[in-house]
Length: 330
Image (cartoon, rainbow, N blue to C red; front, side, top):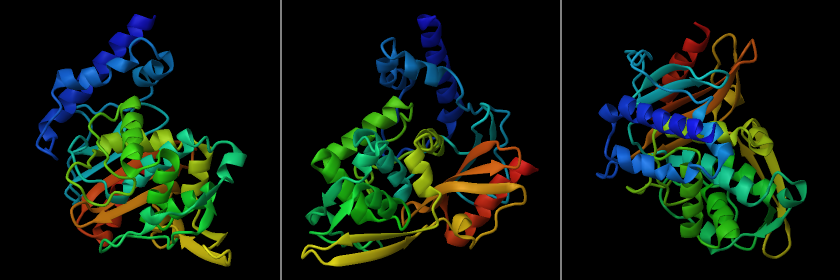
């Protein structure tokens, strides 16, 4: 049975390559050849049956029969994936390499939860002192406004990371978990590869622009659906607002209230009738455009991951997302 699963992994990988290779943008110019992508998955064979089972079943596969043309979708890439069966409802350029901006923080949170063992309450309450890495001065960087010397819990840092999209929280988490930004990025890449996101490469925990920092809509689906398996992640991204009370470097009380940047969750954007939002993550840089990934549920309790990458602006981002998730109920 083990080798049947191995063949299933290889067959699925070949299918993914063939359906996506005609749409791929080279960011950077290097493109994974088929054999190299298969080599990237070779560590799954045959030592880890759990991951082999994951790869051999329950993942959406994009075929030529999946709708991919819709004049209403202006974004560079967009897709809708079912989590209840391996069906893809819509896919436009789902294998095209693009910059993820702050959607990167989904992987940052996933690595923090798994490598920090944050499924355990005592680890969620672990105290972390913010270091100099939290000083981020790049124009347009989103922050949760923590400062060197502040002391927060890991739980508070997760909320600061995901709700206001705090790059300072991302850097603090990275250094706490791995000792450096670079070492944490290596963990991110290892985790991406482990769940099959082999067209993804991270160089930082927050998504500020770097030409070597890229992914695809399909890989983001793999990453997000994996993160949503973690109860603390699901709780955080489904929260509309959160207040963190902590201490500054002098031991004085400090408080920050963070609001979720997902406008469906905050009620600023209406969901299509018959759907409710469970959580998600936005991202915006000049190079990435406006991006959003999220999970929705229909009235029968079926769940879906939808992703939009490189919309022109926030207005068209939500128009595109509404148009693609409307396909769930139509």
